[in-house]
Image 1 (cartoon, rainbow, N blue to C red):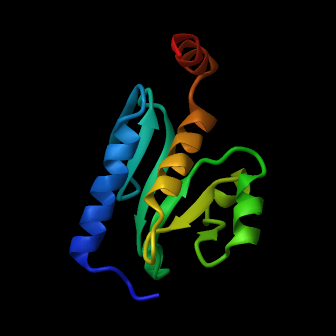
Image 2 (cartoon, rainbow, N blue to C red):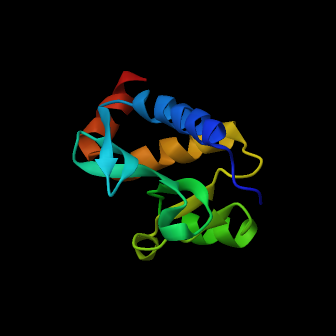
Length: 129
């Protein structure tokens, strides 16, 4: 896959930022040099990775519900991968350097948020619905 231009990386990062920050009690800060999104400023749920250690991938590392990593990587290894450092904990890598289904990315980001959000926060949202 051709690597996206700097403008494409910036536009995709901004789109991910809007998805993440629209979720309750989220914040952003740099972590390990990457834009990282947190629930209640404590637990990360999405990292935007831009050619991490020269891997040639622009994508996301996201917290994932149990079993999702294996399921998605097996179903489409061109778009999904097991990221280093956090993959052993079930995190999922999502490539953004090809054709991107942004509705799918939005669902993956929401699942990542729910995977790390405190139970009381999840319960309060469900009660409000």
